[in-house]
Length: 388
Image (spheres, rainbow, N blue to C red):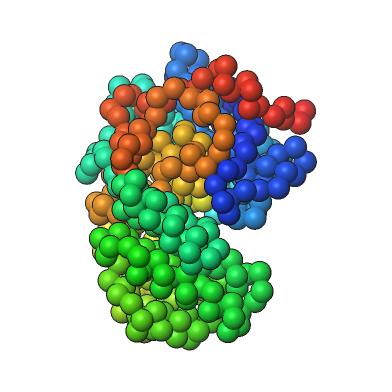
């Protein structure tokens, strides 16, 4: 079996979830996505997704497409079942530690896993080592800016069966800088949500690196702990993603778990986090680390070090969420997973099959590969013509 071509399908999606809406830029949304189809000479193909978030992953859609084209050229004629070999070929295109092109690499990696699952007649999670479970509790993000709005949104998701909520508490400090008034908004929102929810729901307070100072982060959380129950509260990425020493200080100073997200860039970065004992849990994004193969390497480091793992929905479609679901099946600890990002857009997803969401849970099936295929008619309506 040989790779004979790679098809690229850039998609236009319209965000509808509050806080996630993006401006149009050059014909793409700021959160554009590219579906990848890797074709082989015996007719088996695999699907992957490269998400381009200009404000988060720092790549434009055009840059991602150029990386994908370069990988496609280099991989022509390669064995799609040799996943390690494919990554070594991609290393020759973009280097061995390539932060700027990881979403493109992840899309190829996921498509090759899809091909391998189809070729061997098994779901992708079996290729990754097997499943601890195939049904997961769901987590979602709450972007609402005020305490009352955040509480209302949180209660609605809990009523729908969700067991995990990520409360965004960095918007005010990012917009206005650190200061008493800005921090007061974030604290009051968290206190209100914690008081309104049962302690059985995970509440992750995500500062998105915006709290800047380790001592300020400790002081804010100590105030929250003094005002309300917080056995279900964790703090995510309060300061800069490279400042692992400060995160270790915060972890040592607080009674609640500390989560790192943006710091988790690669297996090598994860090893440094583990060595410094800088996190109780991480957020693992295959789209950011280059695919399922490096993601499983990161998961192995975490599992050996008793570090928890949450999965986040950085792919924007049902395809990317399904790939994340297969990875979630292999994880030892059952934290709620965020695989409902495809619900954040008004367009119907251009796929048949994939993971199923119901009553606050997600379930992946046992079909070969990812168990999802393109719906050509729906796809056509969402396509953006790539530049020549």
